[in-house]
Length: 347
Image 1 (tube, rainbow, N blue to C red):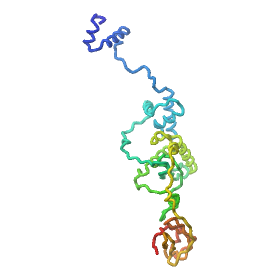
Image 2: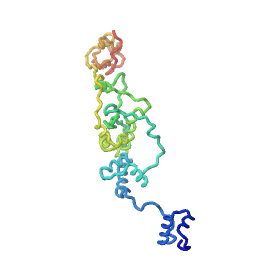
Image 3: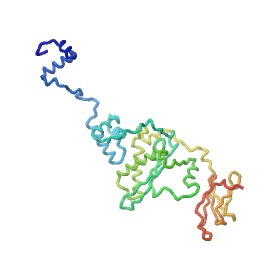
Image 4: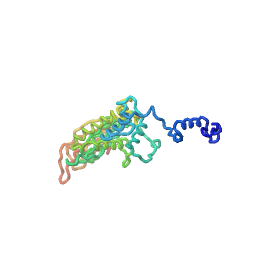
């Protein structure tokens, strides 16, 4: 058009372009010659909503800080903590893109969609608690003792009710109920055991074990139970009051726990009659207890004839406690406590 003098309409029709685009090319040619006609990127020169360099640096630094402390360092947690420092906070998706751009996100294989899981959650706080123990080893160079940590989680709010360290949580085997189960029954609390070899039954506390151990692995190895307990107490405060929980829609467990009324034990479960009675084993080696208007005989065997005992009675359970550890001949001494149901052998 410039050199040959042809009309713009003819050139636009021949090359299949619009007249407006032809005039734009003509303007670029007049400004820079043939080099100016090369293809150009359509990317905008500026972006008004792009994250500022200072905020982007804060995201990277916060990621390193949380990871070094053993806390969750995902995009949602980072966005939650940024809200305490900045007025305008990017979304978790934007935080994820920034982390990925800096090479801080490890690609993971495609996971099972959340919609495929059947989830259960108690309707109220204190309606259901999940409890479980996990093992942890004290620092090498002391005694290297393997200890146990008892974690107690509220099913509704995920509030960490307890995280306590013990040498061992389980006691020796015994027949009947242990004292902990009896105390729960007195308070109107129903104790249920999870399905063996099926950790999904207590999935919330099982998953919490991983979170706790990731934190402990970043701390200075504890040389004693007391030091380990201090670490557990510090994590419990952070977990309950500062760490946002994805299952709680970004709320902390403490906020979720305080947001609703608390469940209470059923009144009828707490109506258990308790009494203590001193007695002596009969010539037949048993003691007699009245239960539901009938006499019930609880036999311990002829080896304990005449033995003074104390009966701890809770509903239909009777615990027979020996006052002395007298042995009979070559037989072993009477056990410190033996539990029987009161409805056996009525007369």
